[in-house]
Image 1 (spheres, rainbow, N blue to C red):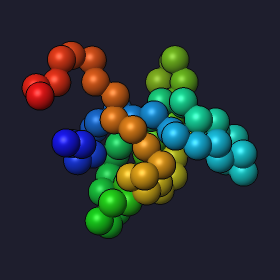
Image 2: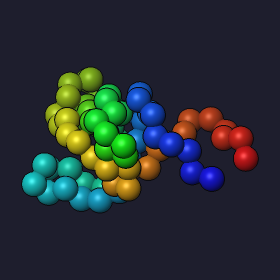
Image 3: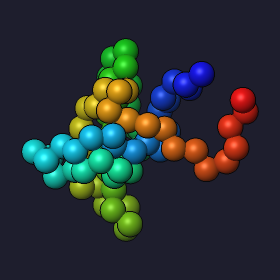
Image 4: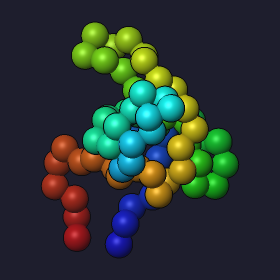
Length: 71
């Protein structure tokens, strides 16, 4: 079962958004729940500087996990 995305989750973009200068695979952090299934995602560089912040739907994102997930 797919876990629900939550605030502060690390996510990856599943599609290119050329008008925003983003490509699939770029990593961001959920910073706000805007409405059901819509999140504000902040994309930062390696120095922690934000280069894009935008609203994205859950189906445009995949949650990333750094430790084992219980089955």
